Image 1 (cartoon, rainbow, N blue to C red):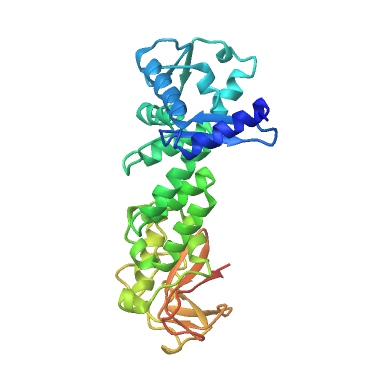
Image 2: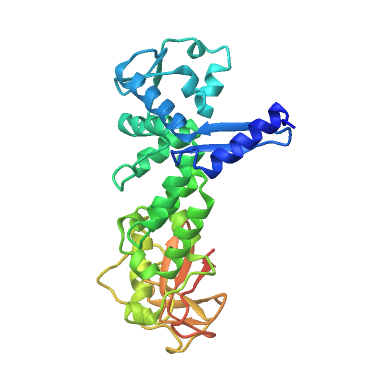
Length: 333
């Protein structure tokens, strides 16, 4: 007895599958519960992308132009609408929603061109020289996938010489994972990071934020002694604001108002062991005045005045000896 047309079709499909009916690896088919069969070819998707890209390059069948830094890019409005930025633009009553030419400002044209290629082809090439510009364009146009690619690329190239800049960049664009990775590198390799240009560009507030982080570690073998590290860090910190008060003595000293470079004060009371005792030296009378105790005993440190407060940097404390970098804030007033 002959089977139904559906049975014949299913038998035909099964038989063709057994005999390698789909000669091309990009062909695919899928059976459904109602005995129907869906067929497709992945090359068709690629061919569509290729044709749309060809049209964009030749200017045929396009219906909108995007202008960036004086350069014009012919596009399909429907393709641009797959980008959140343009979709929002075209969905409103703004002039740009129906304009034939759309001008974008404050972005790099070469990076926009790369991102536009990605919209049409799904591929983008990112390098060290343009990753920041591409990141800016992707953030503006809200192309999340390219933002992820930039994140991955920067993570791969993260190092002590650029981690401060990366940390600030990640904070600007809301890349939390990248910011965490960069900050962790700053904390664990602080001695190397401190020699970078990015470190010297930090504001006082940003620098103090790093110094107060409990994760900050400076190994003595990396810096040749904690006293050297303290002096180096104090000078970098103070130089930014012109408040250098770091002195080669083992006890805290603060200038009370008059700078006499040629006159050296007598050593304050106390020795070289960690102590909470604090004294202020007066150049005019050559005397020391006892002040309230410091937060914890410390010796061999350096001192820096920032925004009217005295920061005690490095040295030896009562609880630790060169193994962990530390800092305290002392209110002079």
